Image 1 (cartoon, rainbow, N blue to C red):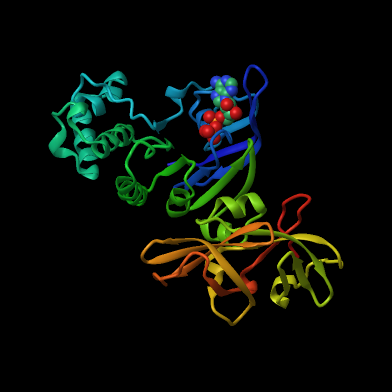
Image 2 (tube, rainbow, N blue to C red; image 1 turned 180 degrees about the horizontal axis):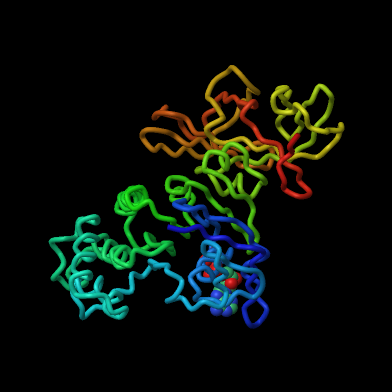
Length: 361
Ligand code: ADP
């Protein structure tokens, strides 16, 4: 298997769009790295540069220790799975998987061995003689992955491979691909706009916005210590509440329309703060409890109630900020009801409003 290194990679498309700006990171041998961000952030471009499908404007891409900037895709020893599986409709499943190997002049025996091995791994052995149109979406998706597996590539690249599947199948295929990663022990780079996919599948996640890398971390670090308001807002669902306000003190108090709250020492410890500093306080919906205790109490009027069964989302206004709280269970809340909630401030995050960056000691 292999590692992939990006050194100061930039992509400028003709016409002036800079899709990726100065990206540097390493995908370690056997690691599953997810590139995630909203549509247009440059994640597909980044993946396609690793694949060799887009020219690199500046910087270098290395596979193991070889600079591949000028190496054609077919010689990079990578396999890519696309969103629209791109199966050949007139070929059987077997032929779809065998095709690339035939082009590379593998022996008939080796091809047969590899196709059957991949089919067994993916549970599609019984469909080998079918044409793609006689398969379900999930089965087609497995054939597309099978076509990559038979190549025994150094690196697997996935470009939104689950976006065409319905929600339930997506969840199932997500787990299957994670299992496949463990089983093949392969280096994988996976592109998605879906933060849940990123969080559940990635060993590490690269968060992108407007072509810039925002943060590279493992899933729980991204959740617990987001580098800025963008990452904080992108990771986690429903999204974190971001309340603009100011600090007074010491002792430090967060002041915002409708809220005056003493901040726990654990939140401000080691920060270089001055009184009157504008800050954004971030608090996740799951860190707002119902009732009293352990934080800053607030009496609020519910504007929207979303019962999910196992949990309930409560929406209310704090000054001009629409807030969301996530409560476990059904709760039987009503719109326009007045309820007490508590912001668990020991779990809050502080950001600098001028840069969006997290305040760090
Ligand atoms: P993502 O995969 O995150 O949705 P892309 O990498 O596809 O984003 O695109 C990043 C930016 O580059 C977008 O602004 C997009 O419009 C632009 N872009 C993508 N492909 C081309 C192209 N072939 N020519 C010009 N601009 C492009």
